[in-house]
Image (cartoon, one colour):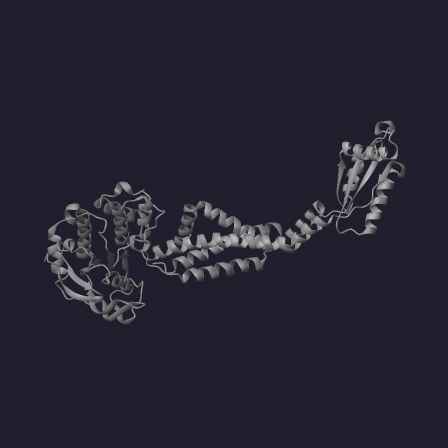
Length: 238
Length: 259
């Protein structure tokens, strides 16, 4: 299984089945602007995000990445412009926030169990087996009983990532997901997302200011600066 | 079931806060329900302990003083009867005797008295007090008893009693309410924060509101049970005040941006 997650074949497969085909957009942003008082965080953004896309949102700090993600998770509303959601009746977007929003006084395992949904998993046993598998992949199976408030940055990021992933979302939105992680762990996360992208058509929107990292991954890059999209295209990896 | 589990988990994780919150809720809203009864009992207690018209009686020791005391205690209009320390009586009588004639002493007089302090009910009028004093005289025999005058409560006692009646209950009610508000806001904050985070990872909405509704229902039981056990009826006003307070707090927390 681990071998499968890190296999380059997956990348090839996704590039054929995922990005290669024209798909209807899940999100349509037309002339979207967001202002906080006098500050213009986003300025006339036009963007379409289709199902199964793997998007890396890049740009310097304060370029509007987080604001754009918060728009997509419906945590804020645009000041002007039109934002449309398409796709399934109940499009489920799972966020990994920059500040993670973990339940600090709970253990890692309890935080992961937030994602348990009977309608999706049926039995708790099935959910537990998925938790076990994914935690094993990220080498955190021995720290499940640790209180989140005592966990290090890497473990906190992994917990937030898995919690979002375990909800079986249609779209996963991650803000600075790998901020506290080394390259190997970031790679593992990318591989898991990559596999789910291919297997389930998971749409991933991943904001980061680490351009070196995303150049090693495949996907579409949207570069923001000063609240505007200044570049959109495939990563150098491709 | 999920919402019940969610609330139970929060209760378990914040055990001290939860216990304090539940106990204060029970006390505050049952105090509101039983306010009249509680205050009348406290008034009675305070009156008997602080504001107390009373008189002293010296009774010859050939009479069974304890039997007299028991009989008096059972009478309506008597708030309490206590025996007075022998040494106090001796000192007092000695000073009176020596004032009459310096050569006389208490021991020479061969006096043998026991003292009783008879405390009237504060509500009893002068006529009632006289009747009770006459009853005591008839009970022990006129020759065997010396009664002192009825002493009214002193000014300080009356001031304390008045303050308790006027401001004391208000002070208790306001203090208890402020404490309850602090605990409730802490607890509801916790429920809201955890619920709003969980809501982001569940395909369901209004987790916080539904959890608060379950909390209100459970706490209503805690409030209602003592009322049913003691009175046999439910005080709808206290229950309404509780539900309204929780409702307003839920609305207040709902306006906050959590994520």
